[in-house]
Every structure is written in C-alpha cells, then in structure tokens.
Length: 417
Ligand code: PGA
Ligand code: ZN
Image (cartoon, protein in one colour):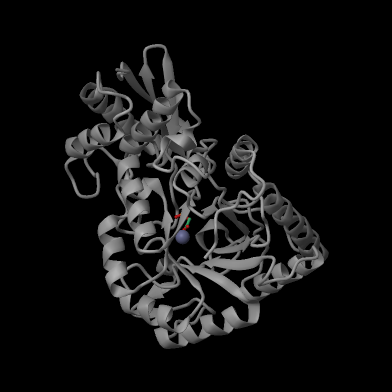
C-alpha cells in the first residue's frame, strides 16, 4: 500500500498577488502539490476560506490555514492509503465537523485533497485525467473564454461581470484555441482603434472603460465577424452576470444602473439573447432568488442557464435547484465545497439529471492546472478559465493542449447539448 508519509503547507501568492495556501503531500520521496484558488464574487453559501486577521497582509495571509495542515490534518492522514481519496476526504470532513468547513478552512482542506489526488496518479504512473471516474473515450471541453471583464473583476463600471465566447464550430481543442485566438486579437485591434485601453482584468479579458453591456457585446460581435466567423453558429456569446452583485431589495441593476423588477430584467435578457444570439447565461439572478431563476428558465427556451453562486458546487443546493427547475447547467468550482470527493459527487449527480457541467477557475488563481484534468476526467463538456492571456489562465489551456496530443483523436471535443 502506498501511504501518506508527510504533509506540509506553505504560503504562496495567487494571480492577484494575494497570499494563498499550497499543500504538498508525500509518499516517501515522491510528492505532489496543490494551490488553492480564491474568488472575488463569492456566493454566501460557499465553503469557508480561512484567512488571518493580520495587518501586515491586510487580513489576507493564510498562516492559520497552514498551521491547520501542518499540525492537525497531517497527523490524521498519516499512513492512510494515498489511492483511497474517499477515505482521506471523509477524514478531513469529519475532522473539520462544520457545515461550511469553518474550523479548518476549505482552503487548507482542498489543497490537501487535490494534492492527494495528484499524488495517487503520479504513483500509479497514469495521467491525472485518467485518475477520475471516466475510464475511456476521453474528450476535451469547449473553452468559455472570458474576453471582456467587468463587474468586480475590473474597474470599468460594466454591469455584467464576464463576456465570453465559446467556439462551437471547433472539432478539436487546437481548433477551439485557434478560433478564440483570432477573435481576441481582432478584439484588441478594434478596442485600440476606438482609443480605448487594452489593459486586462483579473481573468485576462480586456477591461476597457465602457460601462454599457451592449457596447461590450457590439465589440465582440464585430471581432467575431472580422475573424471570419458567424456569431451564434461558429461561435457563441456567453455571459456571467454574477447577479448577486447587482441585487437590492428584490430588484436588479443588470441592464443599467437603475434597479428594475425581475420581470423587466427577464425581458431585458430576452432582448439581449435575441439581438446577440447569446447561448449561455450564468447567475442571471441572485443566489436565493429561486423563483426568478425558474421564471427565466421557462421563458428562455434553448438557453444554457448556469448556476454558480446559486449552487456553490453543493449537492443539497443542486438538488433544490433540480426540484425547483432553476437551471440546466452548473458551474463547478472545487473550492466552493472543499474536497475532491464532494466535487465529484456533485458532477456525477448533475450529469445524471442531464445538467451540463462546466469546470471553472476562480478570479484569484495560479499555475495549478488541476481543473483541466478534472474537466477531461469527468467528461465535462465546457471549461471556464479566462482569456488567452495571463499565465495562470493560459496554463490551463496549455495543459488541455498536452492532453489533446496524448489522446491522438481526430474529433476530440465533448458533445455540446
Ligand atoms: P470569482 O468569479 O472567482 O471571482 O467568484 C468567477 C465567477 O463568478 O464565475
Ligand atoms: Zn460566476
């Protein structure tokens, strides 16, 4: 049996320059590391991220979480079978004992959990994507590239947080990348010609000083056309509204700064969907506004409606959403729930009920490419990991290109619904 022989954690930094935790799990001389990502537009039902009340790091350091790994977690998982992920994760969950992992911190728990998963693959000498529940016929996910950043990921005043493209025409992952590359480069030219800034936001998309959703959408439509593709056919526009951030007392300020009713907000969405051929919308409404979600799903026909802050990768919330007919897709962020095992449970359940599963980065991310492997290993048909810019985003795409090369398949894309 390959046993855990040592676990250590350290403070490293994420793409925003904020401290985060990296854990390293050992089996003898072999080890694997994992870095925990961190969000900015977080859902209130997410697992707890432990940070210190430390002036030096403006409250952002993670030394308590590191202590929890080094002094508490390490002792409990010592000598446990490295390949028994479920056992190790259940020990971590029990050891914490709280609903939202507030005692040990989901960041300390997840960094260990992912490092164990990676180490298991390393010891078996198999690629990481082959160490999940899908065992054959691997496919690559469609990238949802966030090419214009707004909301809390930029300081331009754009209401909607993420304006994305999905290269539906692509039959291989390299083709998907090539389509996105052309559109992004043309978008850069168009933004420059308008004398706007081509500086980027937290997820690598451009963050020009525009504050109107439709201005951003028109820029994207133009760049798709300029690249020789047909919007709504070859390429789809997708949005993440991050509705939590635009909610006040039953009203929303999605379409302009003014707060309007749910009914009017839905009509605003329907107009945008028609005009810009939008195929996917994430978090159109706030995390507790279940009725707004189901009303929208009824009226939006073929739209992919994605729950992120709504579900927070939590099985109970997903079940509630399923009964309520809230959406037809779920965003998967391992740090919203805190262990690999719980993440896989949610993905499996979502796939069973026919939901699309979209594996996602966080706005604060790192060189860690675990989510690329997770996407392939669970046959998730989409991945959301920023623009083709900023190394922490590009690292995930580059890893998928390596996996594509290993698979030696002609048509290697997962099926879109
Ligand atoms: P976050 O943003 O990582 O800041 O939460 C990503 C998202 O909302 O999907
Ligand atoms: Zn989101």
